[in-house]
Length: 119
Image (cartoon, rainbow, N blue to C red; front, side, top):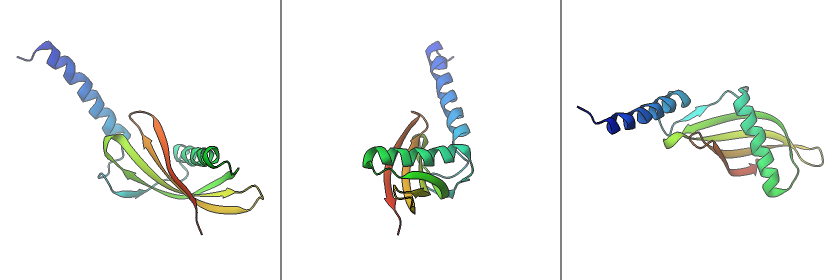
């Protein structure tokens, strides 16, 4: 017979596993997968990446559109996004940028890992 504390501890574990399965796409860890650039959540991540870059670099670029992107499913609910973004600089000239960011679904945290202009 299981002790009451064991049963109580099992319920949160089952809940965490269920959430993990529901949040992450059915993909193997570490694989690189294309994303739907029209998805509102992905669009919001691209806009956030530009805004976060502007906070750090203070260069005033402005988001234009998300061109393409991939995601890599990691452990512990961490998904790394590799986004190609079109943006305008202060002179109104367009340029393409690559943003690499992590989204930690367990903590609701985002981290901009890199943001660079493409040639």
